[in-house]
Every structure is written in structure tokens, then in C-alpha cells.
Amino acid sequence: MPKKLLLIFTRNPELGKVKSRLAQGVGEENALEIYKTLLTHTRDIASQIECTRRVGYSVKVRKNDLWDNALFDKFAQEGEDLGERMSNAFKKGFKEGYEQIIIVGSDLFDLKTSHIEKAFKSLDTKDTVIGPAKDGGYYLLGMTQYIPTVFHHKQWGTETVYKDTITDLEKYTVHTLETLNDIDYASDLEPYPEFAHYLL
Image 1 (tube, rainbow, N blue to C red):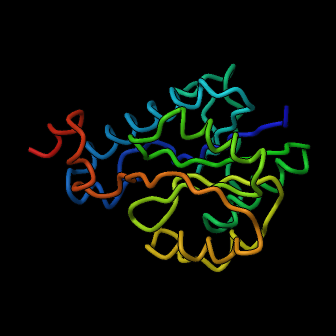
Image 2: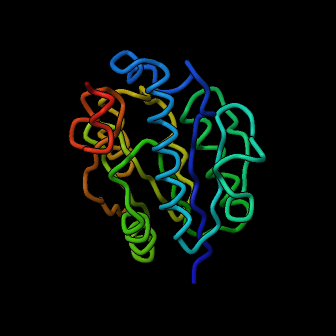
């Protein structure tokens, strides 16, 4: 069995500091509640995966929060932008001897345990795996070796990220997962009955 690491990047859930684009449509307090719901969903999904689970905090590591210390390792993200922060986390993981490393975002209500399990399974035969998001980014990225180019020269948070990343992976074998819906704007909540009361 390859040594597997699942990375989850989160923002500390604080009022006015998360989901700013979503907050424009539903207000800051609602945006915070929605983000906490998304974090809980991500935690429940990740808890079922057989691997090392590691949560990267955007600011400060919280010891007693929704991420159970018995199930999740915790660390503070390091780097100037998202690319550098991901790069450092992958580099560290490979240095520690992990053979398959996957990172997922924490704002996907569509994410299922099966997506992550399929992603790890695909790394048995492929160099990399990617899960495209409808907004042009990606919700999951995995690899069996450190590939620095994918973390640099990206306009993070824009619709070109997935396309630019695929270009960087031309020399590698890639497994592509199904496209999922990121929740960034109020309109992204519309498919989900669970969030309908925020849109009234």
C-alpha cells in the first residue's frame, strides 16, 4: 500500500474573513455560517478516508475546533500566495516519505468520499489527478511526485487556473475527475435545498 497523505486547506472561520464574494450576496454572518457548514461537510468526508489527514490553517492553528486532533494533523500554511502554500505542503509531504499526496478545498458541498478514494486509486497508475471546478479552478489536485511548475505563475481564484495547470502537466499522465461546483457566490447556493433559506 502506498503511503498516502490528504491535505485540506482551510481559512480560520472568523466573521468578515471568509467567503467575501459570497458575503456580498448573503451578508457576512450568513457567509460564516455557510462556511462552517462546508467545513463540517469536508471534515465528515475526509474522516472516512484511509490515509494521513492534515489540515492547513490560513492563519493560526486551532487546537479545539471541529477538526478532531485524533483524526487530523494540524499545521499553519506557509507562503505568500496559495501556490506557494500548496507547494510547501506537498514538498514537505514528499520529503516525509508520502508516495501519494492529494489536496482538496473546503468549500464544496458536492464533494464525496468517493471522489477522494477514486483520486487516490488513480494515482496507482497515473502521475497526477485533478478535479476541475465549474468556475475554471480545481477542487482537488494529487500527485505521486513533487511537480513545482503547477504551483507557480497562476492567477489564483480566476477561471484560468485549471487550464494553466493542465498545460503544466503535459509531460505527465493525468486522471481527470468529474467537474464539481465550488461555492463562491450566492448563486452557487441555488442547487442546494440545505442553503435555500439564505437566499430568501
